[in-house]
Amino acid sequence: MGNTAEENSSLFPIFILAIMVLSLVPYTIHRVANAAWKKARSIHCHCSVCLRSGKYRTSVAKKISKFSTCSNLVVLLLWVIMLFLVYYVKHITREAVPLSARKVAERNANAGVLTEGIAPFLQLPHFSEAVVKKLGRKKVRTFQDLREMTPNDRMDLLIQSGFSDIEANDVETVLDMMPSITIAVTCETEGEEGIQEGDIVTLRAWISLKRGNGLTAALPHAPYFPFHKEENYWLLLADPVSNNVWVSQKVSFMDEATAVTAASKAIQESLEGSGASVKEINVAVKDAVEKVKSGSRLVMVKFQAPAESTYNLTAYCLSDTWIGCDKKVIVKLKVAKRSRAGTRAMIAEEGPVQEDGIEEEENEEDEGTYDDYESEYSDDEEGEPEEKSRTGKHANGKSHVGNRSSGTDSGSDTDEA
Image: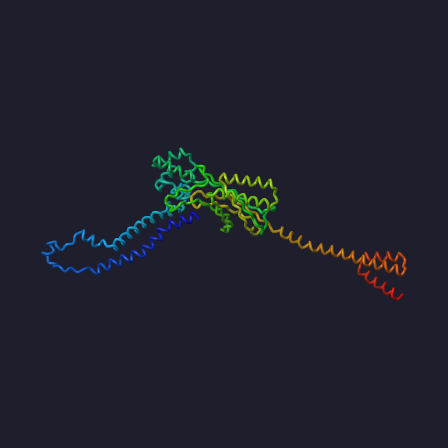
């Protein structure tokens, strides 16, 4: 919200200037045209003698008093304000690094030409193209070469290139503000071994920032930016082969309290989902909080695994403020063929079938008991020997369909008796 308010306040002068131009310029042209067409006719004598007398000449004070009407003064004031706004807008929109400096120079392997152009150098105070050429002759051909020098060697080099002590100290101050980024990225399917096509993959990235001055949050060197510029970074997971961006996430180092809360919550939810113990969760959350306080930020993003293959991806951490401070690492993602979903589906389908089988066996036992009861009753009533009863029981255990017919026959024999 603060950035939005500052952006609006910087755009307000441009808005006022546009309104003034649209109204003041046509009005001024109209007034001048009317004054030219309606010039008052003089009624005095225009001979050379009368003109030389000077009595018909208008003094400067009279001309000023004639011009100093209320409407004319208002128009003049508006023109002064408009010119001031033009000057102000021209200076706040001036770039610190010109676009031409961002073009990458053609490199010859033996020519020693800068590989990244001069743009990273021009974000430092008091630098110009002439200074960059002098550094190139002293074998400082890249911005990284300049940063890797010791402070004393760099100070001597800058003074030899024409910098004063104050200017060299300004360069050191800005270099101490510039960040050094490191990233560690892992991709996994939570609760599973390996990644299979169609899985929900969790990308976990720790982005660490270090500065020479020891700060984590800092406002960069941007003297020509119209308002306070906050550093922001973007984490991208991309496939260079297909030129596709799989994941993009904004990262900020300005608010430590929010980062601590977000990292603690993400780690806790992840471990709870995997069934970790309370002690393990507390230890992991404590480690995450210490990392955040030491200048790291946790990024957790979920995406769906693509088709079976091995992907050589690249994770980029890009700065929207500094040139030459970006970082990238290679991420190898191996996606296996889908197998877990089929196994789970088969188990889910076999469950009801086994339950039906159990119910069917229970029904068979119930029917067998009923048939046994009928056969025992028929044995008692007809006085048949015990062997026949046992034979009936044996058939009952073999097939309940045949028992029902035998039971019916025994009933008919009873009626005939």
